[in-house]
Length: 100
Image (cartoon, rainbow, N blue to C red; front, side, top):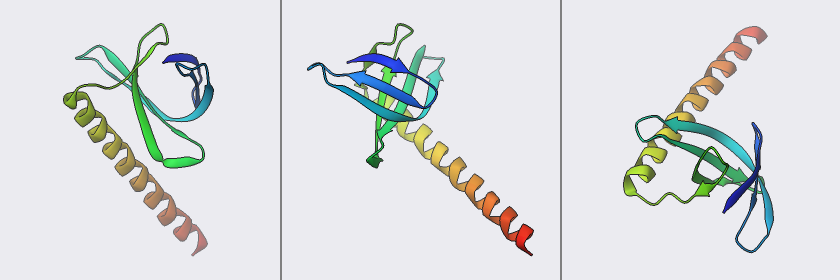
């Protein structure tokens, strides 16, 4: 796979058959120990299916192949979701207080 274009919130990928697909980026992160960058994204029509790939400075995308990387990505995703849930709960509390 080759990354065609990546903005802050979208990634367009051309697959091996030449099909162009646009996805919504959930977030990116770097693992400084490994010297790798990762992007987690989803198709707008299936937000529950998160895809994770490694990418390099030239925009090439690579499949995640090691169990260590899979485990790390899962942990990072869980932390992201936890932080998102906490932020939403705080926002709900704030709006409840504003209504009172």
